[in-house]
Length: 248
Image (cartoon, rainbow, N blue to C red; front, side, top):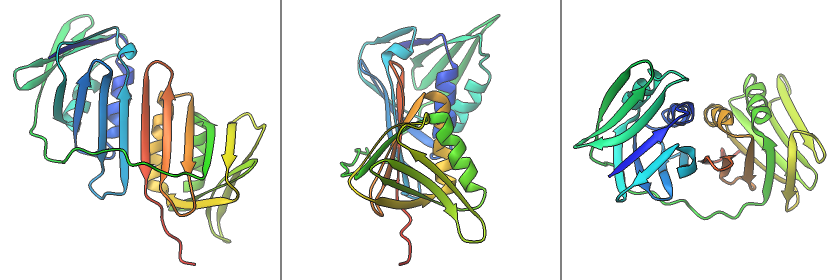
C-alpha cells in the first residue's frame, strides 16, 4: 500500500506521455526508494527505464512494496485532466489505482489494475566505448534537425568531438560538437567510434529532454545506444536502443 502526493503533476504527466510512445501497458514497482519501471517495446528494439525518486513527491508514504500494472492510455487521459496549478494524490483502492486531483474541486479517477503479462526485465550490462554529456534541449533539436532528411541517424565520437548526422550525398545534415562547445558538457571515447540508430525511435526518446537539463549518450561501434536523462533529486529516464547495422 502507498499514499503519494505530487504538487507538480507536470512531471508525472510528461513521464507517462513519453513512456506511452513505446508500450501500451506498464508495470511499476513502488517501494521506499521510488517508483521504478523497466520495459521493452513490443518489437524488442528499445527499452525504457524510469526511476522517480521520493523527493519528486511532496508526500511519499509506502507501507509495503507494491507492483501495479496499468493501461498507459487510460492513465495518460486521466493525467491530461490535471491542470498545472492542481496537485494530485496516488493511492490504491482495491483493484484500482486511485488518482485524486485537488484544484477548485476534488476529482477522482479510478484506473483498473491489470494482470502482468510481460516477464520482469533486467537492465543489461554494457561495455560502451564513447560517452558524451549534452544539453538535453539542444540534443532534441539535433535529432529533429537530422531526422528531416534521414530515417537513420549516425552517432560518431572521438577524443574531442561528437557528431550526429543523417542522410546521403543528396540531402544530409551534420551536427558537430567539439570539446569546449557550450552544448557539449563532456566527451570521452576510446578512439573513433560510430553507430547508426532509427530516427523514429530517437525522436520519441528525445521528448524526455523536457524532463532533464542534460542527457548522457553512450554507445560503441555497431552497438546498442543508451540515453540517460537526469533531473537532480527528481528522476532519471533512460532508454536503450538497438543499432541499425549498415551494409559494408
